[in-house]
Amino acid sequence: MATSNVDVVNGALFRLGQNLITSMSEQPGLNQIYIPTLDARIRMHNWNAFTMRAALQELDDNPAFGFDHMFQLPQDPLCLQALTVNETETEPDPDVKWVIESYQTASASYRVILTDETSVNLKYLARITDVLRWDPLFAEAMSVDLAYQACIPVTSNTTLKQILQNEAKEAWRLAKSRDGQEGRPLKKVLSNALITPRL
Image: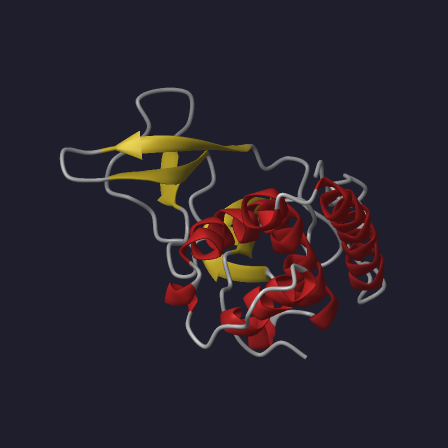
């Protein structure tokens, strides 16, 4: 089982027939695509392992128009996708209106939730980089995905690329299927669980 980002990358390198590493700095190419790939794959499905909850702090500024209140999205860990706002014990409240937008001050720019709610309890998908907190099937799928993306730059082997593409699709399908069997999700939570990644 992978316990670090090095293990995940070594899984990719093994499939490519390359030497294994002890530090991410030894593979600058894979290191460069690691976080973008992780972020994209977290957003493709409402993973249990990447779902977190937070009570948000309202910002001093108000929206210019349209809503009464503005809350900054979590930064640590980074919010990659908002799932529900102020859900009840049974389902998201259909009367809660909210939208994600960008907000900029003279010194910073960040993503915010605009709403008429005076408080926000957010459930969201977070960028969790600690591999020990991942499901093993997610880690395995990440390894295959990285191998697929790096195949041509590293090996120039188009046949292997096709094999890895098929393997990655199946790995993500299995990871999402198993993840969906854990827990009883709220009835009306919108999920992109059936989206197949375009590899």
